[in-house]
Amino acid sequence: MTGTPLSWSHCTGCTCPNHQIPSYEFSPDRHTLKPLNLARLAHSNDSPSDAEEAVLRKMLSSYDAELQNIDTEQEQLTQFIAEMKSRISLAEQKVDDLYKERHAISAAILERKQLLNPIRRFPAEILLRIFSSTIVFPIPRFHTDGDEAWGFLPPENSIWTIETVCKRWRTVALDFPELWSSINIVITDTNFGDDSRGISYVHRIGTQLNRSKNRPLSLTILNDEIGSSFAKLPPAIVAILFSFSTCIERLHLYVPPVMFAHIPSLHLSLPSLTDLCLLPTVESIDEYQGLKLFHCPMLHRLHTVDIPQPCHSFDLSWGQIATFTSDHALYAGRAPGLETQSALRIFQNLTSMSECYLRLELVSTERSWVDEHLDTVESQIHVLSLSSWRFKNHTPVKELLDKLILPVLQQLYVKCSIDDADRDDEETFAAIYDVLRRSGQPSITTLHFDHGDILEEDLLQILSTCPTLEDVRLTDVDEGAISNETLLRLTLKVDGTEPLIPRLHTLHISGPMLFSMQIFVNMVESRWTLAHVQSPSVRRLDEVNLCRFLKTGDEPDGDEVERITTLSVLDVYKTQGMDLTLTTKV
Image (cartoon, rainbow, N blue to C red; front, top):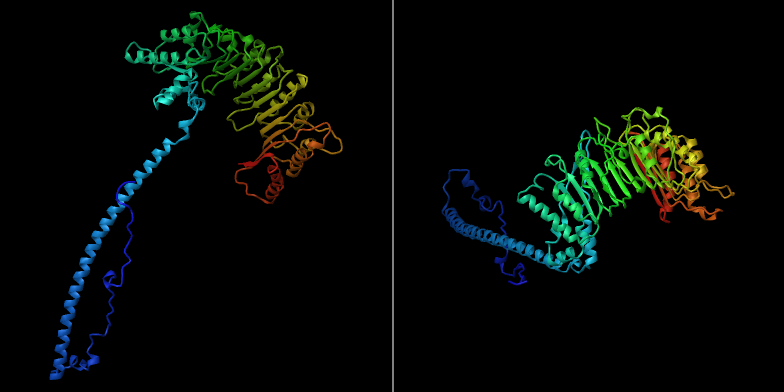
Protein backbone atom coordinates (compact mmCIF):
# COMPACT_ATOMS: atom_id res chain seq x y z
CA MET A 1 0.00 0.00 0.00
CA THR A 2 1.32 3.45 -0.92
CA GLY A 3 0.80 6.68 1.02
CA THR A 4 1.53 7.91 4.54
CA PRO A 5 2.40 5.12 7.02
CA LEU A 6 -0.37 4.53 9.51
CA SER A 7 1.68 5.06 12.75
CA TRP A 8 -0.35 7.73 14.58
CA SER A 9 -1.40 7.21 18.19
CA HIS A 10 -3.02 9.50 20.76
CA CYS A 11 -0.63 11.50 23.00
CA THR A 12 -1.19 10.48 26.60
CA GLY A 13 0.32 13.76 27.88
CA CYS A 14 3.13 14.61 30.28
CA THR A 15 3.43 16.37 33.66
CA CYS A 16 2.42 19.67 32.08
CA PRO A 17 -1.07 20.58 33.38
CA ASN A 18 -2.07 21.84 29.93
CA HIS A 19 -2.56 18.19 28.82
CA GLN A 20 -5.47 17.85 31.23
CA ILE A 21 -8.87 19.52 31.45
CA PRO A 22 -8.69 21.85 34.55
CA SER A 23 -10.54 20.80 37.67
CA TYR A 24 -12.30 23.37 39.89
CA GLU A 25 -13.33 23.01 43.50
CA PHE A 26 -15.39 25.92 44.79
CA SER A 27 -16.46 25.82 48.43
CA PRO A 28 -20.15 26.78 48.70
CA ASP A 29 -19.56 29.14 51.69
CA ARG A 30 -16.35 30.79 50.50
CA HIS A 31 -18.14 34.09 49.87
CA THR A 32 -20.19 34.25 53.08
CA LEU A 33 -19.69 37.11 55.58
CA LYS A 34 -20.11 35.02 58.70
CA PRO A 35 -16.50 33.87 59.10
CA LEU A 36 -15.36 37.48 58.97
CA ASN A 37 -17.90 38.66 61.56
CA LEU A 38 -19.45 40.90 58.97
CA ALA A 39 -22.81 39.13 58.86
CA ARG A 40 -24.36 41.59 61.26
CA LEU A 41 -23.89 44.40 58.71
CA ALA A 42 -26.05 42.47 56.22
CA HIS A 43 -28.89 42.44 58.74
CA SER A 44 -28.69 46.06 59.89
CA ASN A 45 -28.32 49.55 58.62
CA ASP A 46 -25.10 50.19 60.60
CA SER A 47 -22.18 51.70 58.76
CA PRO A 48 -18.99 49.60 58.75
CA SER A 49 -16.08 50.72 60.80
CA ASP A 50 -12.89 51.84 59.10
CA ALA A 51 -11.38 48.45 59.64
CA GLU A 52 -14.45 46.69 58.34
CA GLU A 53 -14.61 48.97 55.32
CA ALA A 54 -10.98 48.20 54.55
CA VAL A 55 -11.73 44.47 54.69
CA LEU A 56 -14.75 44.81 52.43
CA ARG A 57 -12.87 46.83 49.86
CA LYS A 58 -10.05 44.31 49.91
CA MET A 59 -12.62 41.60 49.29
CA LEU A 60 -14.13 43.48 46.35
CA SER A 61 -10.69 43.95 44.85
CA SER A 62 -10.06 40.22 45.23
CA TYR A 63 -13.39 39.36 43.60
CA ASP A 64 -12.63 41.61 40.63
CA ALA A 65 -9.37 39.79 40.13
CA GLU A 66 -11.13 36.43 40.32
CA LEU A 67 -13.71 37.53 37.76
CA GLN A 68 -10.95 38.52 35.36
CA ASN A 69 -9.31 35.12 35.86
CA ILE A 70 -12.66 33.37 35.26
CA ASP A 71 -13.25 35.36 32.08
CA THR A 72 -9.77 34.46 30.87
CA GLU A 73 -10.31 30.78 31.79
CA GLN A 74 -13.70 30.73 30.05
CA GLU A 75 -12.19 32.25 26.92
CA GLN A 76 -9.38 29.70 26.89
CA LEU A 77 -11.79 26.79 27.39
CA THR A 78 -14.06 28.14 24.66
CA GLN A 79 -11.05 28.28 22.35
CA PHE A 80 -10.13 24.77 23.46
CA ILE A 81 -13.63 23.52 22.65
CA ALA A 82 -13.49 25.16 19.21
CA GLU A 83 -10.11 23.57 18.60
CA MET A 84 -11.38 20.17 19.76
CA LYS A 85 -14.39 20.45 17.45
CA SER A 86 -12.02 21.24 14.60
CA ARG A 87 -9.88 18.27 15.54
CA ILE A 88 -12.96 16.01 15.81
CA SER A 89 -14.09 17.13 12.37
CA LEU A 90 -10.60 16.47 11.03
CA ALA A 91 -10.54 13.08 12.78
CA GLU A 92 -13.92 12.18 11.27
CA GLN A 93 -12.56 13.07 7.86
CA LYS A 94 -9.55 10.86 8.51
CA VAL A 95 -11.83 8.02 9.59
CA ASP A 96 -13.80 8.46 6.37
CA ASP A 97 -10.56 8.39 4.37
CA LEU A 98 -9.51 5.22 6.16
CA TYR A 99 -12.93 3.64 5.43
CA LYS A 100 -12.54 4.42 1.73
CA GLU A 101 -9.03 3.01 1.74
CA ARG A 102 -10.24 -0.13 3.50
CA HIS A 103 -12.95 -0.56 0.87
CA ALA A 104 -10.35 -0.11 -1.89
CA ILE A 105 -8.03 -2.68 -0.27
CA SER A 106 -10.92 -5.17 0.15
CA ALA A 107 -11.75 -4.77 -3.54
CA ALA A 108 -8.08 -5.31 -4.40
CA ILE A 109 -8.01 -8.46 -2.25
CA LEU A 110 -11.10 -9.80 -3.98
CA GLU A 111 -9.63 -9.03 -7.39
CA ARG A 112 -6.38 -10.80 -6.61
CA LYS A 113 -8.16 -13.77 -5.06
CA GLN A 114 -10.16 -14.07 -8.25
CA LEU A 115 -6.89 -14.21 -10.13
CA LEU A 116 -5.91 -17.13 -7.89
CA ASN A 117 -9.33 -18.85 -8.19
CA PRO A 118 -8.92 -22.58 -8.85
CA ILE A 119 -11.49 -22.36 -11.64
CA ARG A 120 -8.76 -20.71 -13.76
CA ARG A 121 -6.86 -23.97 -13.55
CA PHE A 122 -9.81 -26.29 -14.10
CA PRO A 123 -9.23 -28.75 -16.91
CA ALA A 124 -11.46 -28.33 -19.91
CA GLU A 125 -13.34 -31.51 -19.00
CA ILE A 126 -14.40 -30.02 -15.65
CA LEU A 127 -15.51 -26.80 -17.30
CA LEU A 128 -17.49 -28.92 -19.75
CA ARG A 129 -19.42 -30.51 -16.88
CA ILE A 130 -20.07 -27.11 -15.29
CA PHE A 131 -21.23 -25.56 -18.55
CA SER A 132 -23.41 -28.57 -19.32
CA SER A 133 -25.22 -28.17 -16.00
CA THR A 134 -26.42 -24.70 -17.05
CA ILE A 135 -28.20 -25.94 -20.17
CA VAL A 136 -31.99 -26.14 -19.84
CA PHE A 137 -33.64 -28.76 -22.04
CA PRO A 138 -36.41 -29.29 -22.90
CA ILE A 139 -38.44 -26.10 -22.46
CA PRO A 140 -39.98 -26.23 -18.97
CA ARG A 141 -43.76 -26.40 -18.79
CA PHE A 142 -46.20 -25.71 -15.98
CA HIS A 143 -49.90 -25.96 -15.31
CA THR A 144 -52.01 -24.31 -12.63
CA ASP A 145 -55.48 -25.18 -11.37
CA GLY A 146 -58.24 -23.98 -13.65
CA ASP A 147 -56.03 -23.35 -16.68
CA GLU A 148 -57.12 -24.92 -19.93
CA ALA A 149 -53.65 -24.92 -21.46
CA TRP A 150 -50.05 -25.50 -20.53
CA GLY A 151 -47.70 -22.61 -19.85
CA PHE A 152 -44.10 -22.67 -21.04
CA LEU A 153 -40.94 -20.92 -19.90
CA PRO A 154 -38.53 -20.73 -22.85
CA PRO A 155 -35.06 -20.29 -21.31
CA GLU A 156 -32.20 -18.22 -22.61
CA ASN A 157 -29.42 -20.37 -24.00
CA SER A 158 -26.67 -19.95 -21.39
CA ILE A 159 -23.90 -21.20 -23.66
CA TRP A 160 -24.11 -18.00 -25.72
CA THR A 161 -23.37 -16.00 -22.57
CA ILE A 162 -20.66 -18.37 -21.36
CA GLU A 163 -18.65 -18.04 -24.55
CA THR A 164 -18.41 -14.25 -24.06
CA VAL A 165 -16.94 -14.39 -20.53
CA CYS A 166 -13.30 -14.86 -21.50
CA LYS A 167 -11.07 -16.33 -24.16
CA ARG A 168 -10.53 -19.61 -22.30
CA TRP A 169 -14.26 -20.19 -21.74
CA ARG A 170 -14.98 -19.42 -25.37
CA THR A 171 -12.30 -21.91 -26.43
CA VAL A 172 -13.79 -24.62 -24.22
CA ALA A 173 -17.32 -23.85 -25.44
CA LEU A 174 -16.27 -24.15 -29.07
CA ASP A 175 -14.10 -27.23 -28.48
CA PHE A 176 -17.02 -29.32 -27.19
CA PRO A 177 -19.81 -29.53 -29.79
CA GLU A 178 -22.11 -31.33 -27.35
CA LEU A 179 -22.61 -28.01 -25.53
CA TRP A 180 -24.43 -26.74 -28.61
CA SER A 181 -26.47 -29.84 -29.34
CA SER A 182 -29.54 -29.04 -27.18
CA ILE A 183 -31.71 -26.50 -28.98
CA ASN A 184 -35.03 -24.99 -27.93
CA ILE A 185 -36.94 -23.43 -30.84
CA VAL A 186 -39.95 -21.16 -30.25
CA ILE A 187 -42.28 -20.53 -33.20
CA THR A 188 -43.58 -16.97 -33.29
CA ASP A 189 -44.37 -14.60 -36.16
CA THR A 190 -41.41 -12.50 -35.04
CA ASN A 191 -38.88 -15.33 -34.80
CA PHE A 192 -39.75 -16.66 -38.25
CA GLY A 193 -40.73 -13.47 -40.00
CA ASP A 194 -39.10 -12.06 -43.12
CA ASP A 195 -37.60 -9.02 -41.40
CA SER A 196 -34.18 -8.65 -39.79
CA ARG A 197 -35.33 -10.09 -36.44
CA GLY A 198 -36.60 -13.26 -38.06
CA ILE A 199 -33.44 -13.61 -40.14
CA SER A 200 -31.31 -13.07 -37.02
CA TYR A 201 -33.20 -15.76 -35.04
CA VAL A 202 -32.88 -18.36 -37.79
CA HIS A 203 -29.21 -17.44 -38.30
CA ARG A 204 -28.54 -18.00 -34.60
CA ILE A 205 -30.14 -21.45 -34.76
CA GLY A 206 -28.03 -22.21 -37.81
CA THR A 207 -24.86 -21.12 -36.02
CA GLN A 208 -25.69 -23.37 -33.06
CA LEU A 209 -26.35 -26.31 -35.35
CA ASN A 210 -23.03 -25.77 -37.12
CA ARG A 211 -21.20 -25.63 -33.79
CA SER A 212 -22.80 -28.93 -32.78
CA LYS A 213 -20.74 -30.54 -35.55
CA ASN A 214 -23.16 -33.38 -36.27
CA ARG A 215 -23.31 -34.52 -32.65
CA PRO A 216 -26.59 -36.18 -31.56
CA LEU A 217 -29.16 -33.39 -31.38
CA SER A 218 -31.89 -32.70 -28.86
CA LEU A 219 -34.62 -30.40 -30.19
CA THR A 220 -37.65 -28.79 -28.61
CA ILE A 221 -40.12 -27.16 -31.01
CA LEU A 222 -42.71 -25.00 -29.25
CA ASN A 223 -45.47 -23.11 -31.00
CA ASP A 224 -46.32 -19.95 -29.06
CA GLU A 225 -50.10 -19.86 -29.17
CA ILE A 226 -50.21 -16.11 -28.53
CA GLY A 227 -47.39 -14.96 -30.77
CA SER A 228 -47.77 -17.44 -33.64
CA SER A 229 -50.23 -17.59 -36.52
CA PHE A 230 -48.54 -20.60 -38.14
CA ALA A 231 -50.68 -23.63 -38.94
CA LYS A 232 -47.69 -25.57 -40.29
CA LEU A 233 -44.08 -25.82 -39.28
CA PRO A 234 -42.20 -22.79 -40.68
CA PRO A 235 -40.07 -23.59 -43.76
CA ALA A 236 -36.88 -22.86 -41.82
CA ILE A 237 -37.71 -25.56 -39.27
CA VAL A 238 -38.62 -28.01 -42.02
CA ALA A 239 -35.24 -27.33 -43.60
CA ILE A 240 -33.52 -27.99 -40.25
CA LEU A 241 -35.38 -31.28 -39.78
CA PHE A 242 -34.33 -32.51 -43.22
CA SER A 243 -30.75 -31.19 -43.08
CA PHE A 244 -30.02 -32.69 -39.66
CA SER A 245 -32.39 -35.66 -39.78
CA THR A 246 -29.62 -38.18 -39.16
CA CYS A 247 -28.45 -36.29 -36.04
CA ILE A 248 -31.74 -35.78 -34.20
CA GLU A 249 -31.80 -38.12 -31.23
CA ARG A 250 -34.37 -36.45 -28.95
CA LEU A 251 -37.37 -34.47 -30.15
CA HIS A 252 -40.04 -32.64 -28.13
CA LEU A 253 -43.00 -31.32 -30.11
CA TYR A 254 -45.24 -28.83 -28.27
CA VAL A 255 -47.49 -27.79 -31.15
CA PRO A 256 -51.25 -27.60 -31.89
CA PRO A 257 -53.04 -30.62 -33.39
CA VAL A 258 -53.35 -28.92 -36.80
CA MET A 259 -49.56 -28.63 -36.94
CA PHE A 260 -49.19 -32.31 -36.03
CA ALA A 261 -51.62 -33.11 -38.85
CA HIS A 262 -49.37 -31.47 -41.48
CA ILE A 263 -46.16 -33.27 -40.47
CA PRO A 264 -46.97 -36.58 -42.24
CA SER A 265 -47.07 -34.77 -45.59
CA LEU A 266 -43.34 -34.04 -45.20
CA HIS A 267 -42.49 -37.77 -45.42
CA LEU A 268 -39.71 -37.12 -42.95
CA SER A 269 -37.28 -39.82 -41.80
CA LEU A 270 -35.45 -39.52 -38.47
CA PRO A 271 -33.25 -42.61 -38.40
CA SER A 272 -31.43 -41.69 -35.15
CA LEU A 273 -34.46 -40.63 -33.10
CA THR A 274 -34.65 -42.55 -29.81
CA ASP A 275 -36.71 -40.22 -27.57
CA LEU A 276 -39.96 -38.52 -28.60
CA CYS A 277 -42.32 -36.31 -26.58
CA LEU A 278 -45.68 -35.23 -28.02
CA LEU A 279 -47.81 -32.48 -26.46
CA PRO A 280 -50.77 -31.03 -28.39
CA THR A 281 -51.25 -27.45 -27.22
CA VAL A 282 -54.63 -25.81 -26.60
CA GLU A 283 -57.27 -28.09 -28.15
CA SER A 284 -57.80 -31.85 -28.16
CA ILE A 285 -56.18 -34.09 -30.76
CA ASP A 286 -58.98 -36.67 -30.65
CA GLU A 287 -60.34 -35.76 -34.08
CA TYR A 288 -57.12 -36.89 -35.76
CA GLN A 289 -56.43 -40.56 -36.37
CA GLY A 290 -53.39 -42.53 -37.45
CA LEU A 291 -50.95 -39.62 -37.89
CA LYS A 292 -47.71 -41.12 -39.17
CA LEU A 293 -45.38 -38.29 -38.18
CA PHE A 294 -42.09 -39.71 -39.48
CA HIS A 295 -40.12 -42.87 -40.00
CA CYS A 296 -38.14 -43.51 -36.80
CA PRO A 297 -36.75 -47.06 -36.68
CA MET A 298 -34.69 -46.38 -33.52
CA LEU A 299 -37.50 -44.92 -31.39
CA HIS A 300 -37.44 -46.58 -27.95
CA ARG A 301 -38.84 -43.99 -25.53
CA LEU A 302 -42.16 -42.18 -26.03
CA HIS A 303 -43.73 -39.55 -23.76
CA THR A 304 -47.25 -38.30 -24.47
CA VAL A 305 -49.02 -35.41 -22.72
CA ASP A 306 -52.76 -34.69 -22.92
CA ILE A 307 -53.33 -37.45 -25.47
CA PRO A 308 -56.26 -39.65 -24.39
CA GLN A 309 -55.79 -42.29 -27.10
CA PRO A 310 -52.18 -42.41 -28.31
CA CYS A 311 -52.60 -45.58 -30.36
CA HIS A 312 -55.64 -44.09 -32.06
CA SER A 313 -54.17 -40.65 -32.79
CA PHE A 314 -50.70 -41.67 -34.02
CA ASP A 315 -49.24 -44.33 -36.24
CA LEU A 316 -45.85 -45.08 -34.72
CA SER A 317 -43.66 -48.14 -34.49
CA TRP A 318 -45.41 -49.21 -31.31
CA GLY A 319 -43.83 -52.64 -31.21
CA GLN A 320 -40.31 -51.28 -30.76
CA ILE A 321 -40.98 -48.80 -27.91
CA ALA A 322 -39.35 -49.93 -24.67
CA THR A 323 -40.33 -47.05 -22.35
CA PHE A 324 -43.71 -45.34 -22.49
CA THR A 325 -44.87 -42.38 -20.37
CA SER A 326 -48.25 -40.69 -20.43
CA ASP A 327 -49.10 -37.62 -18.37
CA HIS A 328 -51.72 -34.90 -18.25
CA ALA A 329 -52.95 -32.10 -16.06
CA LEU A 330 -56.20 -31.96 -14.13
CA TYR A 331 -58.60 -29.89 -16.21
CA ALA A 332 -61.96 -28.55 -15.13
CA GLY A 333 -63.75 -28.78 -18.46
CA ARG A 334 -62.19 -31.64 -20.39
CA ALA A 335 -60.56 -35.02 -19.91
CA PRO A 336 -57.34 -35.08 -21.95
CA GLY A 337 -55.55 -37.81 -20.08
CA LEU A 338 -55.02 -41.48 -20.77
CA GLU A 339 -58.22 -43.38 -20.07
CA THR A 340 -58.24 -46.90 -18.73
CA GLN A 341 -59.32 -48.45 -22.02
CA SER A 342 -56.63 -46.55 -23.91
CA ALA A 343 -54.07 -47.65 -21.33
CA LEU A 344 -55.01 -51.26 -21.93
CA ARG A 345 -54.46 -50.77 -25.64
CA ILE A 346 -50.96 -49.49 -24.84
CA PHE A 347 -50.16 -52.84 -23.23
CA GLN A 348 -51.67 -54.65 -26.18
CA ASN A 349 -49.70 -52.76 -28.83
CA LEU A 350 -46.34 -52.06 -27.14
CA THR A 351 -45.07 -55.59 -27.17
CA SER A 352 -41.44 -54.62 -26.44
CA MET A 353 -42.27 -52.28 -23.56
CA SER A 354 -40.22 -52.89 -20.40
CA GLU A 355 -41.04 -49.67 -18.50
CA CYS A 356 -44.43 -47.94 -18.34
CA TYR A 357 -45.36 -44.73 -16.49
CA LEU A 358 -49.07 -43.87 -16.67
CA ARG A 359 -51.25 -41.18 -15.15
CA LEU A 360 -54.80 -42.42 -15.61
CA GLU A 361 -57.84 -40.21 -16.26
CA LEU A 362 -60.57 -39.65 -13.71
CA VAL A 363 -63.41 -40.94 -15.81
CA SER A 364 -63.83 -42.24 -19.33
CA THR A 365 -65.65 -40.04 -21.82
CA GLU A 366 -66.40 -43.08 -23.94
CA ARG A 367 -69.15 -45.62 -23.28
CA SER A 368 -68.37 -47.24 -19.96
CA TRP A 369 -66.02 -50.07 -20.78
CA VAL A 370 -66.66 -51.82 -17.49
CA ASP A 371 -69.67 -53.34 -19.23
CA GLU A 372 -67.61 -54.39 -22.25
CA HIS A 373 -65.77 -57.68 -22.47
CA LEU A 374 -62.05 -56.96 -22.83
CA ASP A 375 -59.48 -59.73 -22.94
CA THR A 376 -56.84 -59.80 -20.24
CA VAL A 377 -53.52 -58.55 -21.58
CA GLU A 378 -50.18 -60.11 -20.73
CA SER A 379 -47.19 -57.78 -20.81
CA GLN A 380 -43.49 -58.40 -20.31
CA ILE A 381 -42.82 -55.06 -18.59
CA HIS A 382 -40.36 -54.89 -15.71
CA VAL A 383 -41.29 -51.46 -14.32
CA LEU A 384 -44.86 -50.16 -13.94
CA SER A 385 -45.76 -46.80 -12.39
CA LEU A 386 -49.43 -45.85 -12.07
CA SER A 387 -51.03 -42.68 -10.74
CA SER A 388 -54.50 -41.21 -11.03
CA TRP A 389 -56.72 -38.26 -10.29
CA ARG A 390 -59.74 -38.92 -8.10
CA PHE A 391 -63.34 -38.69 -9.31
CA LYS A 392 -66.15 -39.90 -7.05
CA ASN A 393 -65.79 -43.69 -6.75
CA HIS A 394 -63.96 -44.15 -10.02
CA THR A 395 -60.86 -46.34 -9.55
CA PRO A 396 -58.91 -46.41 -12.82
CA VAL A 397 -55.83 -48.04 -11.27
CA LYS A 398 -57.91 -51.01 -10.12
CA GLU A 399 -59.72 -51.24 -13.46
CA LEU A 400 -56.44 -51.43 -15.34
CA LEU A 401 -54.71 -53.87 -12.98
CA ASP A 402 -57.71 -56.18 -13.16
CA LYS A 403 -57.03 -56.68 -16.88
CA LEU A 404 -53.26 -57.26 -16.72
CA ILE A 405 -50.94 -60.23 -16.35
CA LEU A 406 -47.36 -59.19 -15.59
CA PRO A 407 -45.21 -62.31 -15.20
CA VAL A 408 -41.81 -60.58 -15.19
CA LEU A 409 -42.73 -57.45 -13.21
CA GLN A 410 -39.89 -56.26 -10.98
CA GLN A 411 -40.92 -52.80 -9.81
CA LEU A 412 -44.45 -51.51 -9.11
CA TYR A 413 -45.24 -47.92 -8.10
CA VAL A 414 -48.83 -46.84 -7.38
CA LYS A 415 -49.87 -43.33 -6.33
CA CYS A 416 -53.62 -42.94 -5.76
CA SER A 417 -55.98 -39.96 -5.84
CA ILE A 418 -53.41 -37.23 -6.34
CA ASP A 419 -54.20 -33.90 -4.65
CA ASP A 420 -57.30 -35.31 -2.97
CA ALA A 421 -57.83 -35.46 0.77
CA ASP A 422 -59.46 -38.91 0.61
CA ARG A 423 -57.48 -42.06 -0.04
CA ASP A 424 -58.38 -44.76 -2.54
CA ASP A 425 -60.36 -47.50 -0.88
CA GLU A 426 -58.89 -50.94 -0.23
CA GLU A 427 -59.98 -52.24 -3.66
CA THR A 428 -56.99 -50.62 -5.35
CA PHE A 429 -54.44 -52.41 -3.15
CA ALA A 430 -56.46 -55.60 -3.44
CA ALA A 431 -56.06 -55.28 -7.22
CA ILE A 432 -52.28 -55.18 -6.69
CA TYR A 433 -52.43 -58.47 -4.82
CA ASP A 434 -54.69 -59.93 -7.50
CA VAL A 435 -52.43 -58.98 -10.40
CA LEU A 436 -49.38 -60.43 -8.61
CA ARG A 437 -51.26 -63.64 -7.87
CA ARG A 438 -52.66 -63.83 -11.39
CA SER A 439 -49.15 -63.27 -12.80
CA GLY A 440 -47.76 -66.23 -10.90
CA GLN A 441 -45.95 -64.27 -8.16
CA PRO A 442 -43.32 -62.58 -10.35
CA SER A 443 -39.87 -61.85 -8.94
CA ILE A 444 -40.91 -58.37 -7.85
CA THR A 445 -38.27 -56.44 -5.89
CA THR A 446 -39.90 -53.02 -5.39
CA LEU A 447 -43.40 -52.14 -4.19
CA HIS A 448 -44.41 -48.53 -3.52
CA PHE A 449 -48.02 -47.71 -2.61
CA ASP A 450 -49.17 -44.21 -1.67
CA HIS A 451 -52.42 -42.62 -0.47
CA GLY A 452 -54.70 -45.62 -0.26
CA ASP A 453 -56.34 -47.97 2.23
CA ILE A 454 -55.01 -51.50 2.73
CA LEU A 455 -56.62 -54.61 4.13
CA GLU A 456 -54.27 -56.37 6.52
CA GLU A 457 -54.83 -59.75 4.90
CA ASP A 458 -53.99 -58.43 1.42
CA LEU A 459 -50.67 -57.05 2.65
CA LEU A 460 -49.81 -60.27 4.45
CA GLN A 461 -50.64 -62.27 1.33
CA ILE A 462 -48.24 -60.16 -0.76
CA LEU A 463 -45.47 -60.38 1.85
CA SER A 464 -45.96 -64.15 2.09
CA THR A 465 -46.03 -64.85 -1.65
CA CYS A 466 -43.39 -62.38 -2.89
CA PRO A 467 -40.14 -63.35 -1.13
CA THR A 468 -38.07 -61.37 -3.63
CA LEU A 469 -39.26 -57.98 -2.30
CA GLU A 470 -36.37 -55.72 -1.33
CA ASP A 471 -37.85 -52.21 -1.21
CA VAL A 472 -41.32 -51.75 0.36
CA ARG A 473 -42.81 -48.28 0.85
CA LEU A 474 -46.37 -47.96 2.15
CA THR A 475 -46.95 -44.23 2.56
CA ASP A 476 -50.04 -42.30 3.61
CA VAL A 477 -51.96 -45.50 4.29
CA ASP A 478 -54.83 -46.01 6.73
CA GLU A 479 -54.41 -46.91 10.40
CA GLY A 480 -55.36 -50.55 9.92
CA ALA A 481 -53.00 -51.23 7.03
CA ILE A 482 -50.16 -52.50 9.17
CA SER A 483 -50.97 -54.51 12.27
CA ASN A 484 -49.00 -56.00 15.12
CA GLU A 485 -49.45 -59.39 13.45
CA THR A 486 -47.78 -58.14 10.26
CA LEU A 487 -44.83 -56.72 12.23
CA LEU A 488 -44.47 -59.94 14.20
CA ARG A 489 -44.39 -61.93 10.96
CA LEU A 490 -41.61 -59.63 9.72
CA THR A 491 -39.59 -60.06 12.93
CA LEU A 492 -36.64 -62.44 12.60
CA LYS A 493 -36.57 -65.42 14.96
CA VAL A 494 -33.76 -67.63 16.19
CA ASP A 495 -35.88 -70.80 16.29
CA GLY A 496 -35.50 -71.54 12.58
CA THR A 497 -38.80 -69.96 11.51
CA GLU A 498 -38.56 -68.94 7.87
CA PRO A 499 -38.72 -65.11 7.70
CA LEU A 500 -40.92 -63.09 5.39
CA ILE A 501 -39.23 -61.21 2.51
CA PRO A 502 -35.63 -62.11 3.48
CA ARG A 503 -34.16 -59.65 0.95
CA LEU A 504 -35.85 -56.59 2.48
CA HIS A 505 -33.37 -53.72 2.83
CA THR A 506 -35.65 -50.63 2.63
CA LEU A 507 -38.90 -50.07 4.53
CA HIS A 508 -40.93 -46.83 4.54
CA ILE A 509 -44.21 -46.51 6.45
CA SER A 510 -46.34 -43.41 6.97
CA GLY A 511 -49.88 -42.69 8.11
CA PRO A 512 -51.96 -42.89 11.29
CA MET A 513 -50.72 -45.94 13.18
CA LEU A 514 -52.31 -48.24 15.73
CA PHE A 515 -49.60 -50.87 15.92
CA SER A 516 -47.31 -51.14 18.94
CA MET A 517 -44.14 -49.10 18.70
CA GLN A 518 -42.37 -51.70 20.83
CA ILE A 519 -43.25 -54.46 18.35
CA PHE A 520 -42.05 -52.20 15.51
CA VAL A 521 -38.77 -51.57 17.33
CA ASN A 522 -38.30 -55.28 17.97
CA MET A 523 -38.84 -56.01 14.27
CA VAL A 524 -36.28 -53.40 13.16
CA GLU A 525 -33.75 -54.54 15.76
CA SER A 526 -34.10 -58.17 14.72
CA ARG A 527 -33.51 -57.36 11.06
CA TRP A 528 -30.38 -55.43 12.00
CA THR A 529 -28.85 -57.67 14.66
CA LEU A 530 -30.04 -61.17 13.68
CA ALA A 531 -29.81 -61.04 9.89
CA HIS A 532 -26.35 -62.63 9.83
CA VAL A 533 -27.37 -65.67 11.90
CA GLN A 534 -30.34 -66.66 9.74
CA SER A 535 -30.28 -69.70 7.52
CA PRO A 536 -30.82 -69.28 4.67
CA SER A 537 -29.22 -65.86 4.73
CA VAL A 538 -31.29 -62.71 5.28
CA ARG A 539 -30.32 -59.25 4.12
CA ARG A 540 -29.91 -56.60 6.79
CA LEU A 541 -32.56 -53.84 6.91
CA ASP A 542 -30.45 -50.83 5.95
CA GLU A 543 -33.04 -48.05 5.53
CA VAL A 544 -36.07 -47.36 7.72
CA ASN A 545 -38.39 -44.37 7.45
CA LEU A 546 -41.34 -44.09 9.83
CA CYS A 547 -43.63 -41.05 9.66
CA ARG A 548 -46.55 -41.07 12.11
CA PHE A 549 -49.56 -38.89 11.26
CA LEU A 550 -50.96 -36.97 14.25
CA LYS A 551 -54.26 -35.13 14.45
CA THR A 552 -54.23 -31.32 14.46
CA GLY A 553 -54.30 -29.93 17.98
CA ASP A 554 -53.15 -33.14 19.67
CA GLU A 555 -51.06 -32.40 22.73
CA PRO A 556 -48.31 -34.89 23.64
CA ASP A 557 -49.81 -37.14 26.34
CA GLY A 558 -48.26 -39.88 28.37
CA ASP A 559 -48.81 -42.47 25.64
CA GLU A 560 -47.15 -40.30 23.02
CA VAL A 561 -44.16 -39.67 25.29
CA GLU A 562 -43.90 -43.42 25.78
CA ARG A 563 -43.99 -44.01 22.01
CA ILE A 564 -41.22 -41.47 21.47
CA THR A 565 -39.14 -43.04 24.22
CA THR A 566 -39.64 -46.50 22.74
CA LEU A 567 -38.60 -45.42 19.26
CA SER A 568 -35.50 -43.63 20.60
CA VAL A 569 -33.99 -47.05 21.28
CA LEU A 570 -33.33 -47.31 17.54
CA ASP A 571 -31.03 -44.27 17.53
CA VAL A 572 -28.09 -46.44 18.48
CA TYR A 573 -28.32 -48.21 15.11
CA LYS A 574 -27.88 -44.92 13.27
CA THR A 575 -24.39 -44.74 14.73
CA GLN A 576 -23.78 -48.24 13.34
CA GLY A 577 -24.75 -47.25 9.79
CA MET A 578 -28.53 -47.67 9.56
CA ASP A 579 -30.30 -44.98 7.52
CA LEU A 580 -33.02 -44.27 10.07
CA THR A 581 -35.65 -41.49 9.87
CA LEU A 582 -38.35 -41.13 12.52
CA THR A 583 -40.75 -38.20 12.07
CA THR A 584 -44.31 -37.05 12.69
CA LYS A 585 -46.76 -35.13 10.52
CA VAL A 586 -49.82 -33.16 11.54
